[in-house]
Length: 316
Image (cartoon, rainbow, N blue to C red; front, side, top):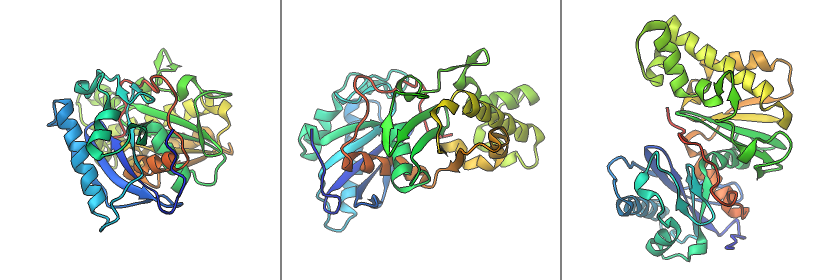
């Protein structure tokens, strides 16, 4: 396996593949610095070649923005699941379906002039948590959970800075989205559609989460939709996640930008528990930093298909 051992000189080209956008930046150093971020929507790409061309374009922009320091030791991509992280092959059918079965490792290695072993993949929720562990809100904590709140709910667990997908208190694969909860699953109650559905049941109107967040100060129904979201998240933390004995839980994703609307409800359930609640410090750059952390620590995702969240997205 390719090892990046020199934290000072090595530079990894990081990518965050989201539900609608792709971002890229070069990460380097023991503090996991990021160079300028290049990003673009991928909604216009409908073939694997067009998507790979977009990755190459963004990666090239990220490299050349460093004023001559464009040499990289490898590439690390944070990707949604399901994805065969070891093989570098997407297994997604619900989004980016044109990537299904494509060997992205070989294709990207050829475009960037790298060896295939220098192109690696990491689940996006795992990357998010690693970023916060390495240079953000979870830095210095021994046991950490990362929750990305958006279209769905992503989750990741870390002990002593290393990702874990099994062990006491860790659900199968480190995923909580599909755990049974109140006659359904967690994602039915903690997701953007849960907030939208709550508001629609109260008012008969359907509005996007970002609009509801903006209206919450003057619209009681919007405010209550976020409060109930927080209630469910607090209960889930105190029941389904309590056995892990986390020191800190970091909340990221699009909905975390409106944490002031639901965090008091979460905290009311946690009470005097020693668990610290933190909102992401790195925000949109967390997964990019996490790619650097994983690369420099020679860590990647679990074998086989990694995580399998059907609606993984950190965006509202």
